[in-house]
Every structure is written in C-alpha cells, then in structure tokens.
Length: 270
Image (cartoon, rainbow, N blue to C red; front, side):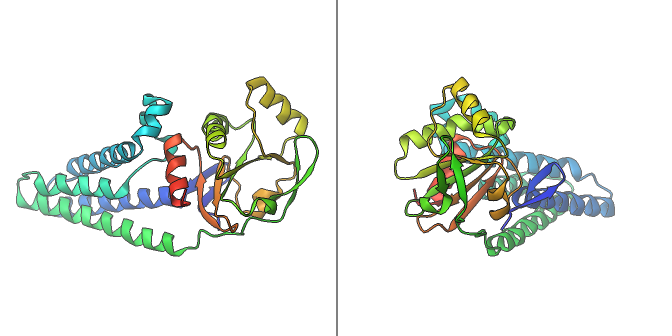
C-alpha cells in the first residue's frame, strides 16, 4: 500500500502529514483558548513545539550516533533524512509545559490543553497508520533487465531480506543517498540490495555509474516503470524493505541517511 499522498509533483508521506495535523491542532486549540481568556498562548505553544522537534531529532541522533559520526557529523543537521524520535519529542514538549511557571493560570491551562490535543491527534493517527497494512504487493515477479542485458526476475531475490531502491540519475536525492546504499551493499552480505532504475536506458545508467566509479551490484533497468506500478509507488527515491519471504516490512519515501537506513534495517530484523 502506498504510504504517501501524491499531489502532482509533490509527494508527502502520511507520517509527515500526521505531524502537520498534530501541530495544526495544537495551535488551533491554543489560539482558541487564548482568545477566550484574552491571553497570548501561541508564542508558548510554538516554543513547546520547537523544543519537541529539537528533542526528537537529538534523541534519534543519539540513538544512531555511530552512523552519523561514521559519515559526516554535519549530517546531524540534515533533517531531510527523516530521522526523528516522536516519543522523545512529545516528552520534551510536555516537560516544558509542565515545568514552566506560567502566569496567569489560564495560560498554563491553555498550553497544556493545546498539547493534549496535539498528542491525542498524533496518537490516534499513529494507531490508524499502524493498522493500515504497509504490506502492499509482495516482491513482485517482474521480468526486468540487468545492465548487461540479462533478464532478471525480481522475485528471485526472495530467500534473503531485500532492499529495493527505486531511483533515477536525474533525481538529486537519489544521487545523494546512493553512497549510503552502496556502502551498505558492500558491508551487508546478509541483505540483498537491488537498485531499480526507473525509466532510463541501460546505456545511460552504465555510463552514469562508470563516471562516478560506483560499482553497484543488482542494478536493474525498468524502462516502463513496471515496478513503480506493481509496488504502488510513484515517488523517487523510494526504498522498500522486504523480509526473506518477500513480504513488505516498511517503505521509506525520500532520501535515506546511514542512520535512517540503519533504523529500517533494524526494523527488518537486521
């Protein structure tokens, strides 16, 4: 099942939309209660939200600190990799709300009510998303082509955990994450990494990889975007994580870092 909303050229993951919904609900309730009491609640709500985001990021970075330090410490600040710890973020926001001596009492009550609303929206949304099976089609039996022209059936990778990366040479985030996936392929013999190019010719892809001296294995060509249709994915890059039986375990829409890849491999049991 596709786990992102596609609006023309824009692709938004449902998890990101849920975060926006929680923030919007928090602000809406805070502003409404503030207007009723004649007090300005929004600045405090924003402080709690921003603190929560910082804590969520720092908690994730600490958990996967070895991956960040092994690549580049500056990657800590690149939030495009989607590395957050929502639970830690909510704890940080609530500690701020509970510990801050706010006056008048109505200000504290409005802040806590706003955070409670956002927390409930997030919790309910998380339950709904977890109930949605992130198990779209299993690893499909698609006949694709390797760079040297050999036919390869995608389902032949069953038997080991498999990471399928949908990418293209013209996609900047695909290019940025490629070294992370290449290193993982080199170091993780227990996992199959399949680089499934979308819409380009074998000649173009081969020349592009040679120019960058990226010796990838399992590079397959999908000129007609068959895999994107079969796997119900339109965004690039998209990385799908299958278990050894070919069942979809999770999907990452957007760029991966070494840390977020490690997080997904952990969820895969690796």
